[in-house]
Length: 97
Ligand code: SF4
Ligand code: SF4
Image (cartoon, rainbow, N blue to C red; front, side):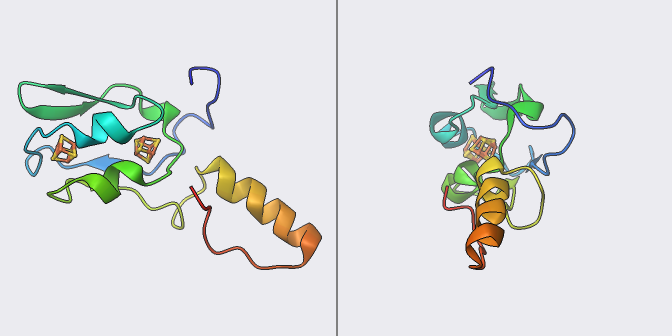
C-alpha cells in the first residue's frame, strides 16, 4: 500500500501507549501496516499511510487507539463517497470501510 496514501499530516490517529497491552491486533488488522509491536507495546511506524478506516480502533481490546473516519478528512473512501453522493443527491454518513 506504499503507493496508496492520502495527505501527509492529515490523519487523526492517536495511540495511547500506556493503555496498550501489546496484543498485536492493530498490526494484524491494519491494511496499511501502520503499526508494529515491540517489547509488548504498539508503535506507529508509518503515520501518514493511515487512511482512517477505523479497523485498528475497533479491534483494540483496551481502547488504546483513537481514530474516527467521521471526525476527520483522511478516509479516501469517505471523500469519494461524499463526492458521489453530491452527484447522486443522496447523503453519506459513513465511508463503508
Ligand atoms: S485507521 Fe485503518 S489505516 Fe489507519 S492505522 Fe487504523 S487500521 Fe490502519
Ligand atoms: S490492538 Fe490495542 S492493545 Fe493491542 S497492540 Fe494494538 S494498541 Fe496495543
